[in-house]
Length: 88
Image 1: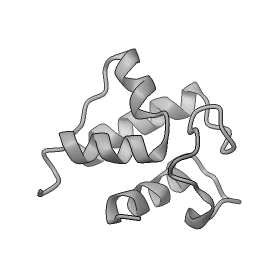
Image 2 (image 1 turned 90 degrees about the horizontal axis):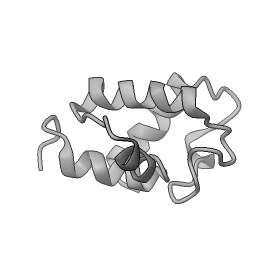
Image 3 (image 1 turned 120 degrees about the horizontal axis):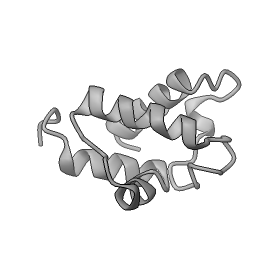
């Protein structure tokens, strides 16, 4: 697991108040929205704000959002490819 994915796991636990979940319990390839973590559309809005604020990546299109938030791995890849805040 890369550093960005590990940080995203911690941020998701924090912003979504997943107090009974540890980063190790989050499968980066599992379905995010509607999956085992119970993430719903309100949670997605919080994740969009976090991604924009922390990584400078804007997700303002429903189709892109559905792909980006399908799994944690997809989110991490999208941020890696599109963030001006990450050095390549």
